[in-house]
Image (cartoon, rainbow, N blue to C red; front, side, top):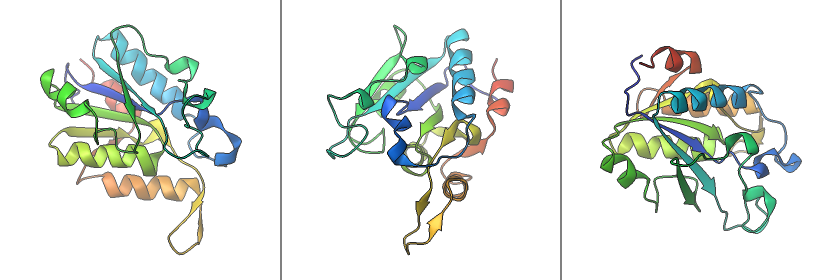
Length: 186
């Protein structure tokens, strides 16, 4: 896989609140390590990094404004010169400057990592694909939580993660392993 020199890494919602126990059991325990490997590679090769931070409209959310849950996790603090985008809905393209930033910088390839796979990651990847960006989602650099389907049947985080990635792969994004991306860097 060829990763363009101007490819952007978009890190979705790696905030303190995502570690709250009320969210339940998650999958992919090595996701942060994979995200950090990509972040280090982007910084080392001087590529664009955009940190997305969610500020919820729901008072019971782990991302409710003016509490510690909205703060970035220490390992994911933006460096000077890296973009920071605030959002209030799952999709980082919706009601934000993300598309404009990318187009102004001539960026057509976007690697999306973070949380939650079936929510903010999937909705951002779908919009990116629909807007004509080449979207890449590393399956091992995002994660989700146990939940229930529409009919109330319990689903494991692994099932939800896998289904979300299947929804994306081919039509909206390329879903690959982090190592495939790292191997494609110039």
